[in-house]
Length: 454
Image (cartoon, rainbow, N blue to C red; front, side):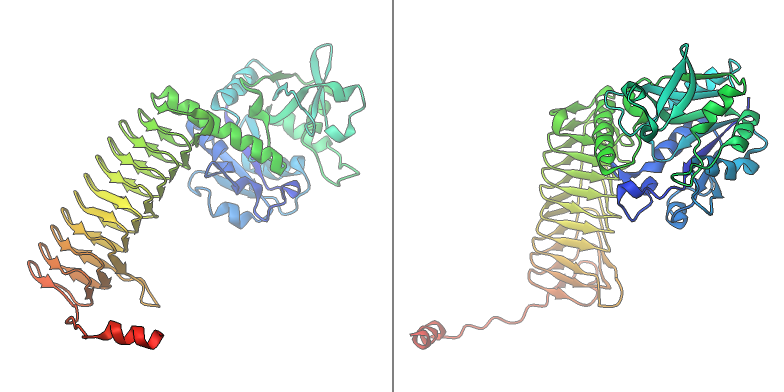
């Protein structure tokens, strides 16, 4: 049995009301299509992605070396999309058909589809009961056997009471699928060809069909409307929290904690109102205080992120302290023992071991050597109006308060920078860099100022 996946991602998603293709909308900080791509990668199933509407935007984010692209030039429905892919999958005996906008189907459920097909079935599809099945195609059975899938808008009053729905995942023998696709007719109302019609065609022609059920009803929820997206977001974050707890994390209030199912949170302490998005990795002994937002970030052992800090696409080493109210932007690297304090912003910078920047600073496009102290109010002036420039600060440098480094500039090891200085030139190792003007005291100024005011 040689299986390939045809992943459908060509639709316009009119009901979502978004300009973006719905398969790239971020679900917990991860494009929706990545959920199925991740499952298929784990199962080592070759992937053929069918693209159409705004395909360039989808191609831009998916890993080109892991998938093959099939282009559906006209979006004429799901059966037409699969038919478009058929010439590319001739070497495979069975085809797994998934929708890129049904992200929560588990890899264990996909395995169940494959294992059931091995029992000699021509078509196995995923079906399960939903408490509120409105909008979903219902599974029509005869003597207990599935004989058709009927779209919601075509149901009669009796059929509308059926709660078993089609969940949009199929495993079909390629020859059976090819036969059925040749018989699918265009829907007169929509002008499209529906993949769901395949089930009835196969049944009427004597093919062997069955269904499997998911372990959770929500595996079949698709992103068709903004409400669906809201529902899936709630489900996905809840699953992420459960995954973290299973790995040993202490989540102090799961109801107000949000963890992406793609993030790996180990034996950490997560306080309330924390959001961990994307593909973050939080190691043992980390503590994240209230109100923090962590996106696509690695935080290593025993580091502490203090309250209301925002961190994205950064790497934080062991025994680091950041916050409260710190902002670490993309490209930040904090090395072991460093301390980033309140209202400090760091962007595309490497902060060396045991560096301290405790108050009200901006460090952008910089490298700071180990043991350096950055005084309150210090900034690297990295943009000259045309391009970004780098600041290099050596090890064990003392930087006083309210210093401006006008990049590009280099500060040598063990140098001192006087408070209130604007540094426009390199400072050699062990030197004092200072640029303050001489202080003047103007006698009687305040009295004259007051008299003028009177």
